[in-house]
Length: 319
Image 1 (cartoon, rainbow, N blue to C red):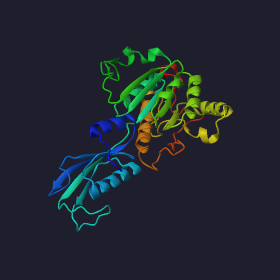
Image 2: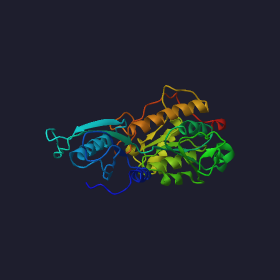
Image 3: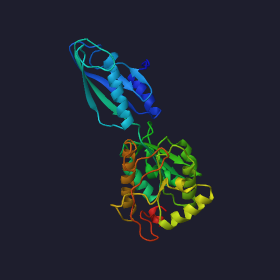
Image 4: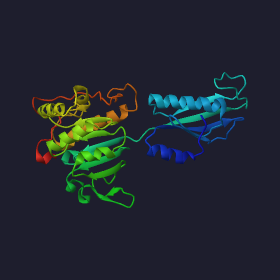
């Protein structure tokens, strides 16, 4: 495959915007003679190359290893050393420059995306936690006051929130005031993890139903009790969804090791599970990974009879 003539930084920026994973290959060390000097870079995506580290067996071997990392979801940088000698065993042709090179391969993962539908007490606490991670965080609410600057923070010239609970956000925070909140699903990135926890069960049902009809979501999590889900199941089946489709919805959400009904406790439990899903999404066959059909293998959470395992049923808890 021919490398495209695009600066590696521009290439990474474009791939990031397209949400395409990549590996940056850097000629980290050169001993003796080599086709390129130290510092040369090559960006490898699943289907494209940008730049060059010297061509021939050197580059082909680096590309193969980079694509292996992309295919397996590797996230750790690694070193690859090759000898450029006619006596070296090669797979893609001989390079007899006489030197030895060490390349650094650095995977660049797609920035994860999480959407929280409902920014009540639990949603706000959850946003506080998730905002401290490198991801795109979408906060959606039908109530304008839940997204008001005096509640979340005032956007500065760069769009970052300052002076509020999300002032130290690492994440890219995107606010969506949507009178019909399920409309925001159309704006989410591929692979987004959706968390549904609005103040209104009617809204929750509409968002869940639309999410099930939305292709490419990473996971769908619904807060609430077993009785709530039983009612939702009946309505969703009546709307044409089958059991395989309903299996995409994880409810209750969170991890069983963290229990409690206070908003901050619920948020910790939910955040822990979401971060597991984010991590597993880059690990093929990982626990909690998303399969080709979008089904999430979710960890179970304890649930007392007809009580939410991660409940938010009182107005003071954002429900």
